[in-house]
Image (cartoon, rainbow, N blue to C red):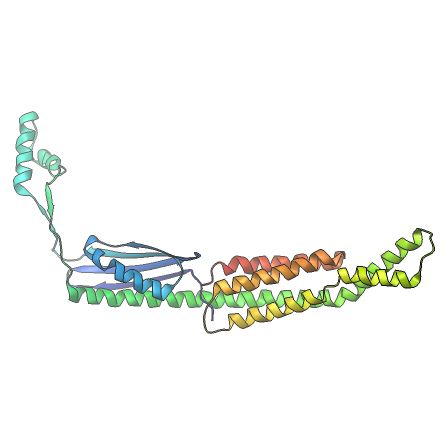
Length: 285
């Protein structure tokens, strides 16, 4: 079962004096690119959180955020009264004005507010940590659901390529006969006598250069392997990408050897389906 790298997870915990919101967002990326945003009080936990998220999400451009909303009359920021009074006294010496206006100016100056450094309450952190795991579970479920849609799309496009390949196989004898006739007419137009046996030998050699039997077999095997890999237990976007490259190599070779307009049209359609598969593979974990 494949997983998408695109996902979203959210969890909220209500504590006695604050509301904590945890969010996880992810997009596709070759490796894990984790951006963490959280209040400074929780920074000491960042390294351990990164390890947990990296283990669970594996790959993707991930944004992890902790938002804190104070819900009670409790704040670590207090007015530095002596400093504010001193600012107001100095302001009165240089300008005339009402106290309320001078106060508005004074509280904007440096050190007018004191912020006491908070220490993490371990019981509080345990509650937050539990919600972080819930948010991770949420984004993984989202990725799984997205992966189901991708899997369905991949199987439809692989089936389309298989149908086109069957059409290629069906018209291949017609193509070979067309090549044979063109060569024969070309030789006859020279109005020269030629050895029929030697001509047949050269014809076989020439046609062998345009033979696509091996490419047809290999492409069929790659298509089957791709579907088998979709149904495997683990999601492996890189492996699917490698198989997609091999499918493209065989399709391109068939196109270069075909030398037959109806077959080349089928090859173009196969390339179009494969490009859509490759584009979506960038989102697979």
